[in-house]
Length: 65
Image (cartoon, rainbow, N blue to C red; front, top):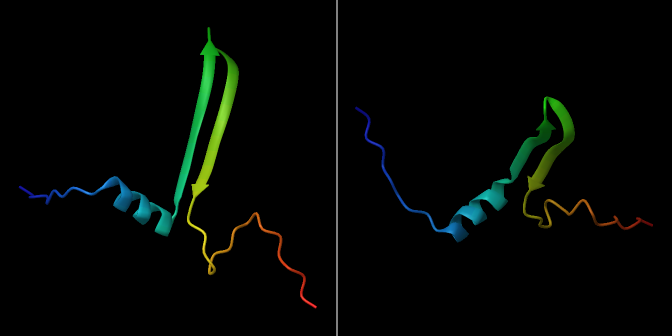
């Protein structure tokens, strides 16, 4: 028998840990009627924090002279 330690983690601490390491979320949603696919949605999301070591991909880099 294995004893597992149980501890509570606050939501803020959980989000801090997830953003520090990054999280990838993927999934597929298909709306189907009578075995006919009507709508298909593919979901891909990357959630991560941004700092000076890991710059935002949405910023335009400055041109070096």
